[in-house]
Length: 297
Image (tube, rainbow, N blue to C red; front, top):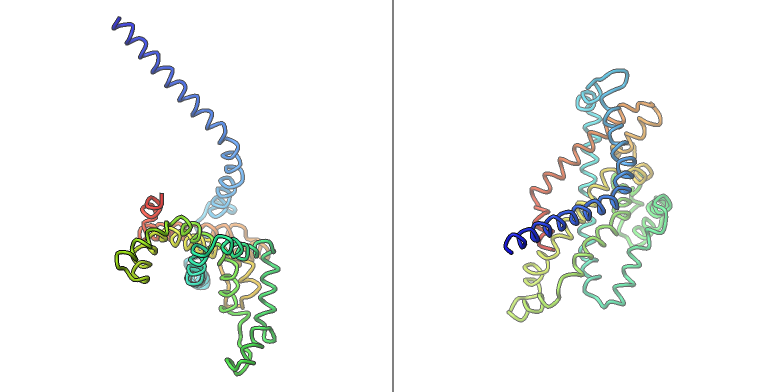
């Protein structure tokens, strides 16, 4: 009887193991189309860019040496990261209060405000950029109001410079910051803040010690998303920036379209990718993203 019981247990374990393997293969089969599409549309082009950065007529590192030996390319890379950082900070400063309002007002009003936030996505980015060019021009509405209200003695240069680039990029990326932070804030239990108030905490103390830490995952996700997208921005800087506001995406476009130097353009793209990944590693070390998102879950 004991041998029969052991045999039954062994057979059950084998059938359970085979069922688990079949389930794993079924999951893999469901993922296979997505994996093939990812390999064809992302991995293969990325490997092609990496290959071209090392090879033109033969294998060489000359393009990488050219990037780091030429001051103008280093200046463009620095300008790109500086602009991305400024846009990210402005989006955070404007987006956090708006996300807080969305998370704390009545649901019906919150839905209406979310529609307002999402509405710009239904318009082409080129159309929105040209609209801002009209608004920020010397004879645009913004300058007319500034002069009429006495806030400026003459029309301000708000276009074709760094200010125009920052304003345009902030407008485009601000909804992403708002939605990312709001998605975390809406999951925060209001009872926690009320409990802090009942224990004698002031509104500022409750916000600083309860609400802000709980929304830190949204801040981390929003800033990371906006910063990474800012690094590759092309249309807005190209239309609203001046000759001294060249970002690396614009430099890559010029190498491809005008000089037809695909190898050097690929080198610039690889340098941007490596620097972005290095920045992400540093950001992760400072912010500890895994702890934030584990805390959220």
